[in-house]
Length: 279
Image (cartoon, rainbow, N blue to C red; front, side, top):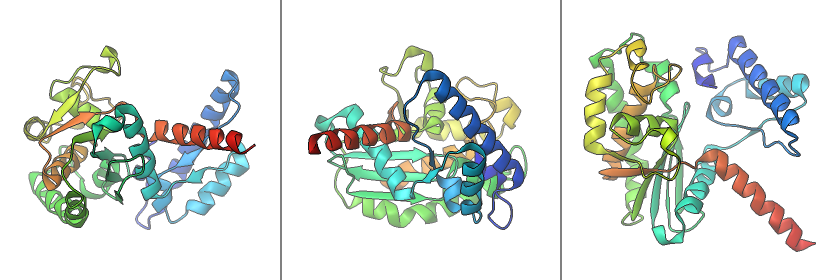
């Protein structure tokens, strides 16, 4: 829902953002009822997690919809996304390092099991950085340079710890931001299906940044793979992707079609199976 775009100067989500969230929850509830869903898994992530009025928002949503959103911690968000990636690629993939760029945060994980050895969540989401740093369209090259330095500084310590875990067998990227960036560098469109191998290279990403950073959001929306509602934040997302790959020494990443949503579902299935076994 890109709720980070509705954060005010005090860090609270404003009334427009709250109303958008309410509409979204109501629509999801109605759709679930139409489809005959037995159970909802309502979660909230970075924007509400960091909002200064998060409890007030949760109460209002519950009061008006009957649904209590559960806030995932940043580390849990990273862990569940990693679970989905591991299940997609399997045990034979070895050590996986995964990056996920959301609207409000960046998740980084690495591990050889279903639970990552390390998991980090940083406030480097594409929407958050766009909202905080860019005040012109397209953004000025000066602002882009300053933002690059900021991202590098935020990544330095987590990247050092991740690299210390050992050699990466498979570098993976999840999220719509990475999928859009891969499409811009020539990866297959979504219509080709989830099983088509899609990759994003560091060299291709650098070329994309040089190209899209000088375009307006309206012009970017005309590009293959970028939706209109995400065209304004793809530059910040690309800067985070490039900096993350550089910090971790990754020249290529494979795009995984599964991410947080699938991780939440898989964890719920696992807990249900465990409950059955205990009976």
